[in-house]
Structures are given as structure tokens and as C-alpha cells.
Image (cartoon, rainbow, N blue to C red; front, side):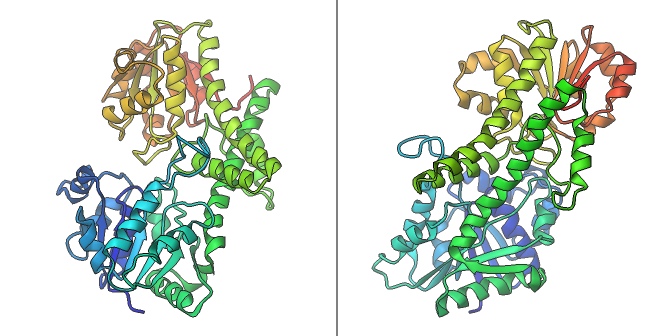
Length: 465
């Protein structure tokens, strides 16, 4: 089956970059990315590429090359669905905040809405591709909706999970470790799989394109994120022991990372993992285990989340105890609000919880992040509903200059590993601060020995004294 037109429903962190790269690599395919959020679509269409709603290194050049040639961004969802041979579903699947599975299960209401809209509009046979992260066996629910449309349309459902790391998404798409495609074992299902394989094969070596049944593909995404998050929580658990014992977590990580059975990736101790995937997917995996009566399995994975929350709280508690057991009225500068460098994504960022903890102690926080907007930071705090919106704005200020953010501060907390932080004039920062001046490096990126020579009191996650 030849694919000439693709529609992607969802113009977020996955849909936008993924479709941009496919459009660049497959100029013969018309790709339309649609979303109900008109403001987001307008940002994707903005002539000023610095205003793209998703910041990823290199993404602006990819969009510039393909946009309005074979890549289009639109709010006309019905038209894009009607024209498409293949439809990617790339909408948000947040953790449920209501009803059965509250706080753990994936909320699939946006997936269902997409399926119902496709069912209503489609008049010709189509291939539906799950790009969102979904619980295992979601494809059967989508197919049940689509097969009862009354329009006589034949649908094939494929699972094609993303394995992107924010900050390197463009390179991950151009040079993936693997592309995973799951589908039915029927003749029609295998033909649909091959249609998607042929698209990726334009730039991905065929030995890196893995095909499975649809259930294995759906579960593999959750499993990958769970394994990666488990490694982060494991090294973070060890960081607490390192601080008490006098060991250096970086040295411990290097020693065990050289073991070929373990490897060195995701062994960087920090204030905690964030982002849209790890916590949501682990909670979802634990919920799935519970629904199958696997209580012990669910408990195991929930511990990964508990260690992550413990690490964030331990970091803020250490700031309070070091600053003579009170931060009330004291200014604390945050360097970084995004959950990691090279992205403007703040979902589940450790900075949010650390800030919330310190604001509850009546600290005054000033924040600098090179890519995250003031509006986004306040929205993150307001969502927690710990304080009134007015209190959040009185206690937290956002600066566009890092030196202003640090001026007059009692302490600095590094919450994102932006490379530029390492190149700052730290002597200038020290001279502008209250004395004694403290640095709490939650990402382990600063040269603490050099900072100590300037006069800073330094704390780094996982380094014993």
C-alpha cells in the first residue's frame, strides 16, 4: 500500500518533531499536523522560528525546510482525516485525576475522542498509528470504536511508540536505536506494517526497524521508560548513602557503569527525574499490574516513584537545614526550571516540587531559565493548588538575567543542567550575594572545588563530606 498523505492528530512534543522529520525525509508524502489548540498551530506556522511551541535543537531548520512544501499545520481536523491514507494519533495521555485508577492509570479520553472523530469522518480504508504512550491492549478499544462506525471503512491499527529523549529528539528521529512497529498477524495487518516500514526505510536501516505484534509494541514503550527510570531512582537512592558515608556518587556510578552487564547510561545522580514520560508510565505500569492482581509487581515499580519524590524532598530539606533551619524571608535563586537541558518542557520537573516545598517555608524564590516562560512557571505552581495564585506571584519572581536572579540571594539551587550555567562569572555572582553564600547543585554540573576557592559553601547531590 502506497502512503501519499499522512495526518497527525496532536501537535505537541511528539507529533510536531516526528512529523517534521518524516516530512523532511519523505518529500513525496504530504503531512498535515492538526490540533484543536489554535494558539499552538499558529506558533507552528509563525515565520519567526524561535517561536515554535516546542524547543528542540535543530528542529527549526527541519521545519523551515519542509513547512508549506509537504508539511502543514492546521486546525481543520476533519479535512486532514478525510484526505489521509495513514493517521497518527499523538495526543496527550496524562495520568487520571478522577474515578477508577485515579493517580495511576492513563487517561484515555483524548484517544477515544480521536477514534470517534476518525470513525465519524472516514469514508475510505485507513491505517491508524498509535504514537501516544498507551496501556497494553489499547488498540483493541480503538478498533472496537472504529469497527462500529457504520461507514463500512476497514481500519488497521498499528502501534509505533516513540523513544525520543527531549533535548535530542531530532537526532533521535534521524538516527534511532530502533523503530518499533506492532500490528495484527493477519495478511491485512502485515500489509499495514509494511506500509509504515517503507516510510521509515527512507532513512532508517532496515535492521533497526523491529516489527512485533501490537501488544508487545504497546508494552515495550512502558517497559523501556520503567527500566530507565528505575536506574535513575537506583543511583539516587545510592546518592543518599554516599552523602552519609563520605563516598562520591559519581565515582560509584563510574565504577559500576564500566560493568558491561550494567552500562553507564542513566546513572547520573540528580535531584530527581522529570518529564512527561517516566512517572506517568511507571504509574500506568503499576496500575496494569494491579488490574492483573500482581500486587507485588505493582509495589516494586511504585518504589521507583517514591524514591524520586524522596530525592526532591531531600534536596529541599537540605537547603532548609543548611540555611540554619529556616528559609523564611530568605531569597533563593533557582537556575533552571525545565526538567532537563535543551527543552522548554517543565512537566514533572523537579524544580516545581522543590520550589513548592521552599515556598511553603516562606522562602522568596527568583528563577532564571533560558527557555521556559514566566507564564509556564506560574502555571506549574498554580496547578499544585498549595497556595493562592497571588501568593505564588508574591513569593516567586522570574528574571530574564541570571545575574539579577542571583543578586542578593542567600543560596543558589541548580535545578536544570543547562550548559551555560557552567560558564557564568561565579566570582561576580558571589560578590552580589548575601554572605555566607551557598550553592546547592542538584544536577552535579558545577566545579565545586573552584566555587569553594571563591568562598561558596557547596552541596552536590551524592557527594559525601
